[in-house]
Image (tube, rainbow, N blue to C red; front, top):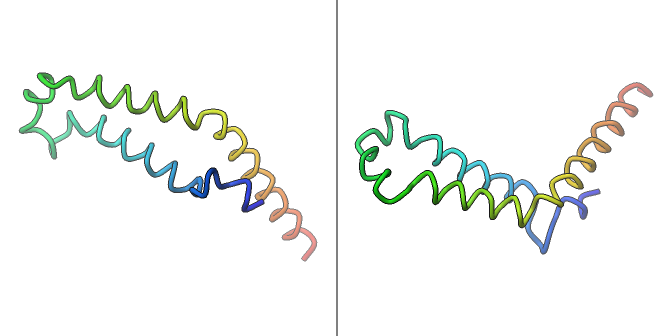
Length: 86
């Protein structure tokens, strides 16, 4: 199962972290932390750039995502079955 959670030597958790970072930066543009960057962020099309980066992530890893979720659900099911047998 562990081998199915890797793609080209990269763990699925690392790939999810990369997507989470992109989404966090996109959402953070309007937050108080980046408040002073609001006007410049519109000038450099911050939202557009990050939306494109997230879409590239989806194109690269979208098919793998279903496999990863299937593997995780199989692991959870196996763990639950073992718990019932105790």
